[in-house]
Each structure stands twice: as C-alpha cells, then as structure tokens.
Length: 193
Image (cartoon, rainbow, N blue to C red; front, top):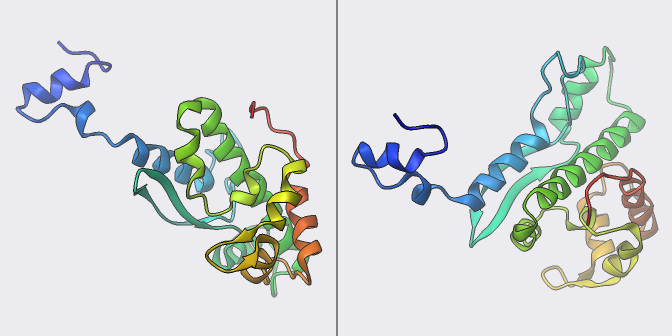
C-alpha cells in the first residue's frame, strides 16, 4: 500500500514516469495564485461568496517564471458584482473604485502570501507579475519605482499606469495613480517581506 506522500511509487507502479518529476512547480505556483485571486468562498467561510472582481485569463510557467494574466476590476466581473449586490442601473464610479481597491489588496495579499510560503521562489513569483507596483515591500518603495522608466513603453511607470488604468477608476494624472496605489498599501498584511 502506498500513502498519499509517496506518489512517485504509485506512478512508477503504473509504468509512468515519476509523478514528482512530471510536476511543474512553477506552473503549480501560478495555478494556486490564479485560484486565490478569484476563487469564491464557500458559504460556511463567507456568506458573500465573491472574493474579487479579478478576471484571470491565463496562468502558466513562462520561461521559468510564474505568469498569471489577470485584470483587476474587470468590467464584466464588476457588472456582475454590482447586480449581486442588488444594485440596478449603470455601475457607479464609487462602486468601481471600491472594487479596484479590494482587488488590488487581494492581489497583493495573494502574491505576498505565496512569497511567505515559498520564499525561495520569490524571484520567479515577482519576475512577470502583471501589477508589480502592488508587490513592493512597502509604500516607501512606491515613489522611486513609479519614477523609473519602463523600458518597454518608454514612459515613466506612473505614466504607463495612468494610460493602462485610465478607466479604473478615472485617473487624471500621475499623482492620481500614486494616490490610488498607496491605498492598496494601507492594509497591513501579516506576511513578512
């Protein structure tokens, strides 16, 4: 009899390669983060099942790094959450802003929680994050990061984020971007960083 912790012998007994050797730990990390970003809570844990309005489009191992393609405050997810809240009519800017902030905090919590669980994989977890501005050690590191130039877009990070996030919620300038992102850092997470 083989026990749960002895999966490689079970796979070998079937003539397959070792189960452990076939597992891709980087893809597994991506899968767990993707699930944590959008997985609904069971009713016994939280009567409000919706954990976020994050849409995860894909998760994978890309060139040895964790990749989770996602969008915070996805329009379709926000619309659905608005209806689930019993609200009617067009989604208000306040509701959309609250959804973005909740998602930003959820994103930060999921990634930093995974780093706390597997600190030896910190570099591959952060290498290709969609929202690296939310994964800095603390808010003091935010302004220097936003002031740097993005090599891909030839804009300051703050200007690139302004372009990328212009509709969620409405941002007028780079200072609005800074103020919005700072709010995501206002919640102290239990994870050592």
